[in-house]
Image (cartoon, rainbow, N blue to C red; front, side, top):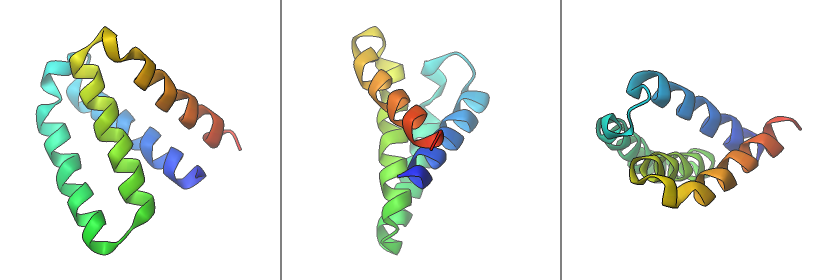
Length: 85
């Protein structure tokens, strides 16, 4: 789980650096992560598959806005719990 949490944290950091503070700019990033997700599925890389699924969900939630705060909070809590282990 730690590996998944670290991957999510790292991928979200990169996404936020590239997309800035404007979630409307996340569409190309989400596409990029979907491509990586497909490749992870083909490789049967469960760690990458899980991490990328949550990264995509997180970024899509950010583009939707305030109604998705609970989803983002849950993923943030997962990252916080498993990266401090």
